[in-house]
Image (cartoon, rainbow, N blue to C red; front, side):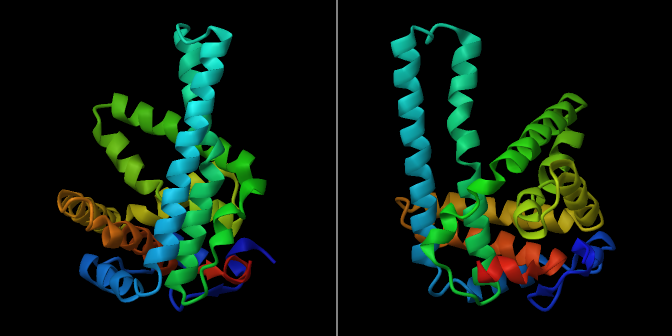
Length: 236
């Protein structure tokens, strides 16, 4: 059975439908749905996000200690590569957070262990992120606007790898092609989330307890509306 023929749930999207633009991402509608699903999701999504940050910071400290011990802290190239390692190693955790959001968006349970369920996808996710950075940086070098376009257009590449099993380049292009016809709707949603998180952070950070999980759920609702969610993503 091909990816486009596989079972999807979540009552809206599919791979073929997403590529054909058969969906709607009205800003108010997406945000309202995400907010309605926030109940019961704040703690697991916040716990996953905090765990991700702590692991990322811990790996960064270990890398810094190793660079100092090896006497390489003055080597610009070695330092740059070393400091990028924690982010790359934590990519499967980012996939786990995506999966938790997708599960919540479909009404499935959200076990914390999902955060650690995607380390077997490290290589394809790493390959995708390398291509992502190359394409976006080239886009920004070409008068900025292409870079902004790609930055928004590639947002679904990571969940397409974990949910649909696409390869690195295929995931990037599938995300871009699907969002092309609704790009300004997606931009409006991300600008709204940016504003909400800024407001949440301004309130002594207390508001982030709601805005961070809401941001994760909003992106998950967007993905589900565009592509649907595979049954294996909800049953794992």
